[in-house]
Amino acid sequence: MNANKQRQYNQLAHELRELQTNLQETTKQLDIMSKQCNENLVGQLGKVHGSWLIGSYIYYMEQMLGKTQ
Image (cartoon, rainbow, N blue to C red):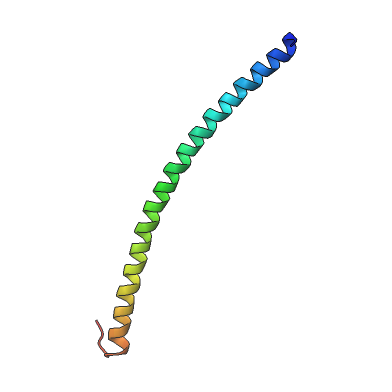
């Protein structure tokens, strides 16, 4: 193999190692982001469900039983 081709293969190997490192870091960051989104989403869903429960209770009390707060 001539020297020029060997140099090109070495450069390609170096760039592929860098790409692999960057992809591993990207994967780590995406995992962190996914966990954070899931935690926030679960908390928000809990708040929404709580609001619906309270809202439906108030509606029931006002409409069905004629009670106002």
